[in-house]
Length: 42
Figure 1 (cartoon, rainbow, N blue to C red):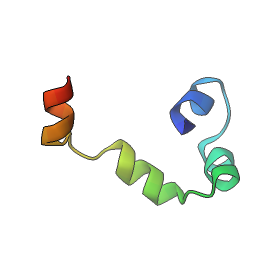
Figure 2: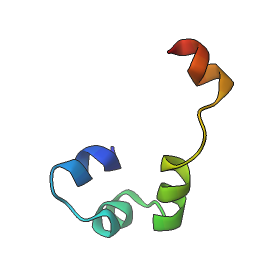
Figure 3: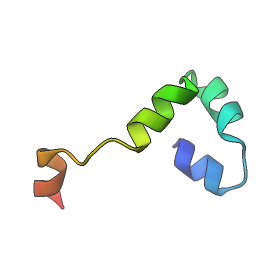
């Protein structure tokens, strides 16, 4: 969801604040390695 809002031109900090997500938590989620389950689904 945040990725879609950021792509539409909204600042990451504002999106995280509105959705109740910490900015470091968002970036940790975004840069995590692909899980084995996700690899199987793809």
